[in-house]
Length: 297
Image 1 (cartoon, rainbow, N blue to C red):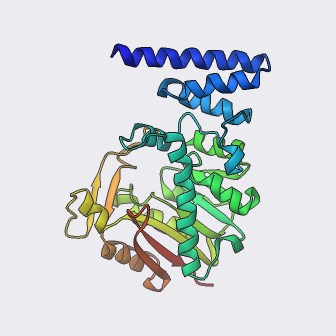
Image 2: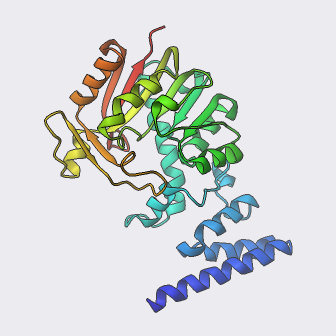
Image 3: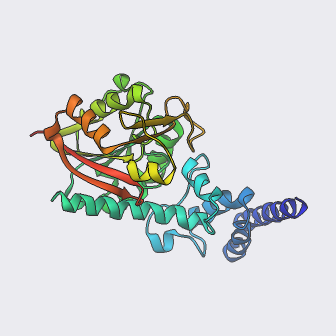
């Protein structure tokens, strides 16, 4: 325990030195001190954001080509930081957004709907921008709208990436779209919803799609349930009031698993089975199933 405290104290001292060097205009010394501060979680994110904001030596922006600052309240970054397999949570977090972009692009290519030719995208349940920053690099901020129920997440995306932000609501019926979009992308929301709101959110999000456009959603499917030793009920559903998010009520945003049949039945009864254009098991992160739905023209 004393070693941990000593490491944290050293990191905070390095962070303070880095800030003083920045104030004095000593960029090389600031970079060296802040890189030292990256070694401990107590100072890591503050040091990282200073390095990125001032484009110091070692900044990710130099080779990724976009804003690499990470919001202090980002639950997904904390997930990586606390994961036992992550030895460089900053790199892992930023690389994972790139992975999602490549998976989405391949999925849309298979549907003959290339992402780069998409005129407008709504990223729903967007969080603090793990994926948004990559989407903006691919499309430009003017084609991207984000929406999340956490106000800080929407505000951060607006400031950091220049996108349009729409604050979501707890109840799907209370959310009113400012417009419709050619693509609505919803990664890892339906893997968290309870049964009571699952189909309601499906209908509300489909309403955001323009005629002829696509809705892409992901779910924890049967392979994910098998890996986690989760037993689905007779309808193909499981929900637990637990998640990585500290900002949302776990009764509304927990952890859900669904069979392919469960999802197909919800689509058929709420939207019509003809809307389902494609299905890929274990597609996103080789862990979540992908469903591609098309709104009739």
